[in-house]
Image 1 (cartoon, rainbow, N blue to C red):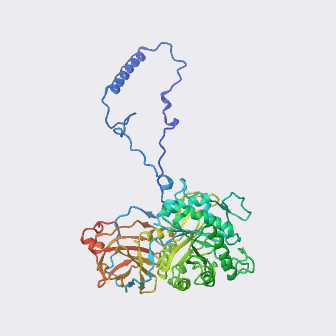
Image 2 (cartoon, one colour):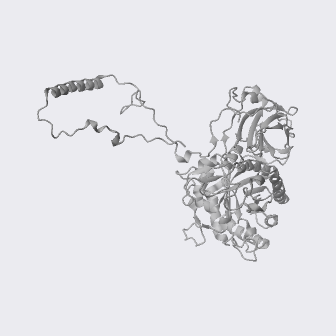
Image 3 (tube, rainbow, N blue to C red):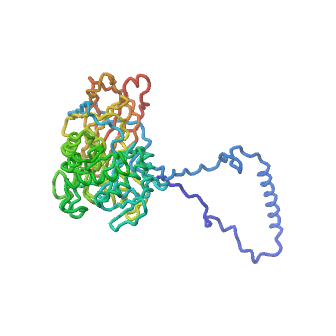
Length: 593
């Protein structure tokens, strides 16, 4: 951030050598002093006359003037208000034209990327965002003049927002009548809090899902919260979920987090859903529901087979690295090697595919309402790393290709230093006093990068190689093509470029463009997977040499991929370039990233 300099004169800056003690001066000045005084008087009169009668400079600032005095110093630029500042270390909003390394002399076997547009392709655009603990609804940063939270969320382009987490059933207290909070409550949420959050949702065009407390078995209180949430969020409220991870309520499932008794099971859950929905619909008829917000497919089916009305979606939670003991040496242990392994992508297809299967059987959309790299508390070697950013960019597309229509990364507004190690966002203050100034981390950079992919349909990829270099793609509603190349290789271990052969997709239909030309690009990068710093330039027009290339069904385009990068490259209909509507390319672009 820029910090304006303070410009002022200190008393000690004056030269006190001009001041003398005259107590013992003679009573009558000498002739020399009289002459000096007379001469000084004449000089003063002349100077005053010159000032009074000289013509005024028309640009001089005066009491009624506007303009800059001739020769005046340029005012020091000031920062915008904190509410307007996007604070994401590593982000460059004004880069030069985008370029890629020369791929013409690469001799390695290329990674071949083929794509198909299927009938059930996931719609791209506004499908991912952030999940928060329900206690964060009471955070003062929402819609505050002292916070840049709105500006930060707006950088994700219509993000999804979800409020739930373990604390909704254990630490959040809702009241619309100023009741005192019980001892177990960590935060009290009120209608005023919902209105502040709703103002942010409106400003950033977010679709919101809200989880209500099922742990304390209080249907009327939940119904009251839904009534106020519906009024506050309006059309931005997508669905209500009754309880968070109900499979973890019993003492047997989670002894330290149990909120129900030993008799809690799927039958009791189904009964509770009906009891809660009856109370909610009495206050807010026609409420839409999503659930169960669990990992276990047994509980997913318990939700779909329940008598809950107005089911909108099946929601699943998944954290792929859940073994917190780093010495366990399992594929689900929290290590950078596991986080960047192609095996993790295969696990996503297996596990998320099970959830998608339950949703398909019920004829409902599939949502990944709470996710992240690991569910382990505290930090580990993957925390705040560039590896996490690469995984994020790959995982969003993997989940979308599987069929997830909504993806929310679990987050906190806790302190960046000492708190919220996996959260894409954090607060700049201390652990005890996080404050309201929000920063984005490296995984937030990854989410920003993906927000620049034009809305469209996610293509189904078939990519050769060992999976360390993966390619995803979106066919834009405007006829554009965007390729996302995720190179999981460690730049700290190799600098070898990988040739990637990009093919035009099949199944687009007769009205699709016959050829595309590169238009714009950006690249997320770092010097090592374990680095805590990543860089991301804003999307920029491609360099002239790249803009001259053409991609057709018969002529794929080979580009070079750099280890440890996620590259987004958007192609436009070649006819737009022929008509002079293409990018402004520069032959003197900045150095290749």
